[in-house]
Image (cartoon, rainbow, N blue to C red; front, side, top):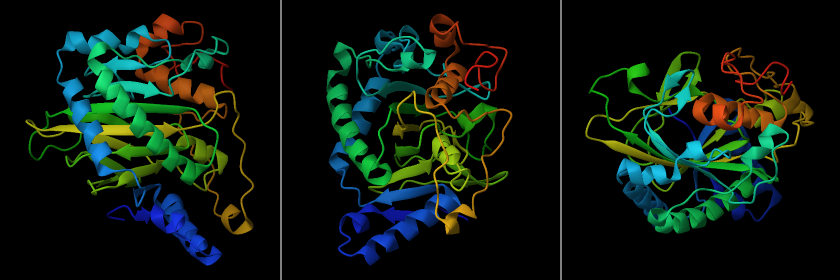
Length: 333
């Protein structure tokens, strides 16, 4: 595989016969099972809105650090807000990017179990009033697209991300050029909007990485850990990473991760016999245990990535000596 496939959502929306819908599902099934990543076109989200969000995100990231820190993530037990360059970790290495973490804006729902603290409001400031309005509109459109693909009650996590340039021409991917390290996404599906600057790479097979380039008016969709668990490996979450842009360049990504209610425990779907025989089982990775209870699996990722918030608001469940899950022994099992 040298490139990821493209799926046209308008083929599903405009399908007038059962046969046409089956043809769409077969294409989607191939992309999801064989690759785990695909471009989605024909989704109906306007390029004008997408360009507007990219531009306003870039404006925010160019603000002085003290202004961006008004909504610092370290002040939110819900893991919402701004993280400066080097403030997030993947596999113990600092990621060379800055970002705003967002989600569904909602009231808190209590502190127990600890993963319930993930529910809560986003952080905004006077300087982000325009960005908030644009993000809210874009978020609503992306969620509609996600419902079409997924059709599930969900908990949602989003990010607006800025990758500053620091790589030299010809640099191979390394810890020194890590925009974000190799990882699988939590959630069911990731809905990603990228720009023209290269950097996203997908692990096609063990140790073989391919570039995911920009495709006009397309979202990049990938399978998350929850679908891997729920299909017993028929669908596999695909590892991916981002290399820093070249010096003098910068990259903006906007992403929504669709999951489910935090107190849900994942069960394996009953697949048709022709699919069931292709189940590969959940990939066992000692560095990334997959936890069936959705809230604990989400929290695992947050605690590993944001140690300051983990220590400040999650001391009751956080174990910094357990890098695989960052949870104290027995929690989430």
